[in-house]
Image (tube, rainbow, N blue to C red; front, side, top):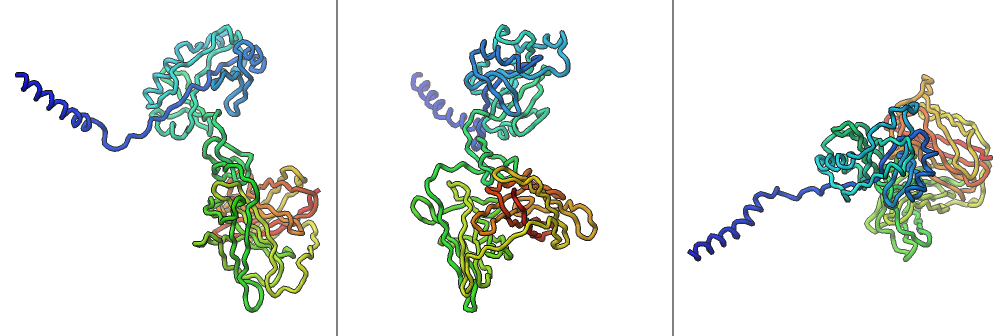
Amino acid sequence: MKSLIRGLACLWFALTPMVLAQSRPAGPQPARPSVRFHHVHYLVSDPGAALGPAVEKLGGTRALLPGVGIGVRLGREYVLFDRFDGEVSASQPARPQGSNAPAEALAWLETQGVGVESPVIAVPPAEALPADAAFDHLAFAASDLGVVLKRMKDKPVSVTDNVARFRLPSGSILEIVRDTDRPDAYWCPMHPDVRRPDRAKCPRCGMVLVPIPPARLGDYQMDVVLMPRATGGVSGLTLTIRDPAWGKVVPSFEDVHERPLHLFIVSRDLETFAHVHPERQKNGAFAIRHDLPPGTYGVMADFLPSNGPSQFLQRVVVTPGYAGSPFVTPTLTAGPTEAVTNGLTISLDAREVRPRRPSTLRFHVTDAATKQPVRDLEPFLGAAGHLLIVSPDLTTAFHAHPDGGLTNGPDVTFDPTFPTEGLYKMWVQFQRKGQVITSSFVVSVR
């Protein structure tokens, strides 16, 4: 009898792992997204007046969360205030005070397949709030808002870049916000002041943010080798980008506006302009076939090394066969403000240009034949347009993209910062019907 029992027990333990294995879903299971409690939101008659006493009673610090609200910060959580819609009435303070809101919120998130880092939700006591405070909603923070929203079963009633609002079965509102307490990890290569903790698009130029690199000392170096022709001039260029620390060839680059490197070539007399894109070679250098007659040229490379900050390097080269002086600076005259190129009339409004601060350059594009506004501009290298600006002596140059992201026209606006007063020449580029249109202008910055 004992032998039979032992045999059945052994059979049970032998089969149990097989049964459990068969009961598990096949394949790797996606990680369950989670959120953390972020803030409780109240409606008051005067948010500004409510803030001071609330800070004193709750013992926190004043907080302003762009796109979310103002209130009191208590560690990683907030008590926020907003104004009543319309006039304050006796019925508005009678709104639910949120006593059941935490339990309902936690239960609802569970049904959505979303975990909560801590199930403890602290709602401040009534005596710590303004007398007319009415509970409005609870909010939770997600480190990756997009991932959480994809896993939710219910659809939000409204969504912005930073906030998604859901209606619970009771009719109350629950918010999920993009976490505001994480360190910035991404920035815009063209606008380094635009930073976020997660990957997104720059609200100024529409570029996808890239990882913020570690701090580096020193400057990147660019070696330029000419491909001479027997008859004078060159047939192309080879560029080698070297690391500032060791002088070694930079191993990898990020694509910025669809290319790892944008190369601008401008003649000393400012009459020749090219925006080209050399190809990466096996040895790590960039090479391009591009004919240049004898002369002096400014060579400007715009690129983003992986694990490094955005770079704009300039070199002056003299091609074989040139007998003139490489130091002659052309004389510029401001205007005109309208140019006709490839069937397009491009008008420039530079009235808001000032030195040492963001200026406005507004281009208006019309059809030269019909005089009608052009509304079918196409993205050119991931942007509505590209703009290169240089000083007469080629010592100052910068590459800009439109403010506000993509547009089909007729107006395209740039916001460059001119470092000093003086005259500058610029080349603006658009694309229409697969053709790149380039026009040049001279502006006076005063």
